[in-house]
Amino acid sequence: MIAGFDTIASTLSWLVYDLVTHPDIQDRLIAEIDEKLAGEEPNYDKVFGMSYLDMIVSETLRMHPVAPKLIRQGSQPMEICGVRIPEGIEIHIPVTTLHFMPEYWEQPEVYNPERFSPENKAKIEPYAYLPFGQGPRNCIGMRLALLELKMTAAFLLQRFRFRRAPGLKVPMPIETLFVVRPGAPVLVTVETRNRTSQ
Image (tube, rainbow, N blue to C red; front, side, top):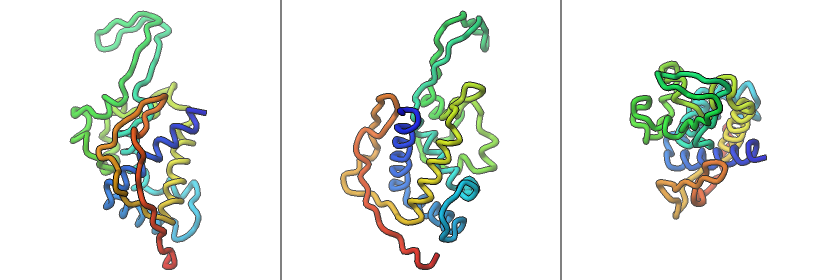
């Protein structure tokens, strides 16, 4: 339940927070949603065809990975970059730290979906971005999670616009209990969008 529900709820909270603190990014995303959906309900093919939505979800997952670390245990002795690792040793991989290392990310503290544009995505060091892990032990629910995030974002932003409400904490404190979530309420106002022109 935690893996399938709490992670999505937390990431959606961070996504809304990122959109209300960057209204220009929200406006550009709404424009893409209106163009791609043209007033129709979102579906799998359409949401996975939205490049800017993918960039935003990717950047939100970079800045706010729900799993702050990955834990692996070696089944046999190995050596990585000259470091000998005995069998059975538990290895902690600091995902949040990797996502904010300046040697991999230019201005890592800045929310910038453009770092995940098609031309920039290919330049990303594969093991510096691990919101779902990597390799044969990556998250089995990754595609379902991305579908849920993108479908929900498209459905909501097709109908509503989110605005920052008084009292929203910026920067948002972080709470870690199983997953990394906002440490204070994500206070927003919700405006119904005029969809008559769509």
